[in-house]
Image (cartoon, rainbow, N blue to C red):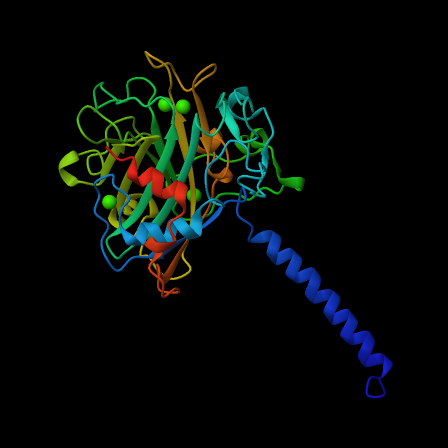
Length: 337
Ligand SMILES: [Ca+2]
Ligand SMILES: [Ca+2]
Ligand SMILES: [Ca+2]
Ligand SMILES: [Ca+2]
């Protein structure tokens, strides 16, 4: 150690400590708002929006995403092995329950056959794509008027903070206090969400509800082919494509998918069960979010992060992903009706 003199060593140590502090601070400041992080990779082949998740691109990205990205009621169950957070009851106007799972924000779930969602996202120059494979023991087509959302649905909410500028809240031990966030974060002009009903008597549908409760003229018109769903042997599947132009009125300019772009993002899935179906409330129904809880339609501060990557899906592996399809996923695919 002859080449190290003491002053240099002290300086080096101080420098190291300063770097560590700065690194820690910078890590904290760039953390996702509620912990969820997902990367959307590029697809070179446009996705066919038919509710069938049989594209090789979906196979490839689902293998990367599941089970760590699945929406499950108890992320710490060894079956899922997710190291995410627990919702602290009290958000959502006091309606959070946690009944049936750590991340359940409404109602009660009775296990993975009652509700479990595998999902993935891709993009190309025209669209941001989503695929959902939802396990649901009691599926229901929405049969009411599409122009207004009339009653609760088996449906999917996609929520966006297009400028990714919602306030950040830090909570220790992955215990997320949505009540505190709700009191300090509200929807602004760049924040928006859409509600999708993948199973409808009319074929497809979507609502836009954060600024007005009406049917979204672009996403909600079946003729545009942006949303499709299918019943499966275990529940239902859904595919959506959101034209990048749909974000422009909220973002205030063209939202271009560039490498490293981060958008605030979350998902809520509402589950109505029973015959006739009830609401997304206990005892049969429920609602659960991917990254936060059902406060996400009021408070963009609870959203997670969606990052755009220009890496082409499947390009990192030379094997055909269909040969590696997990048996459960293969079973689900075979269950399409
Ligand atoms: Ca498809
Ligand atoms: Ca269910
Ligand atoms: Ca915002
Ligand atoms: Ca249901």
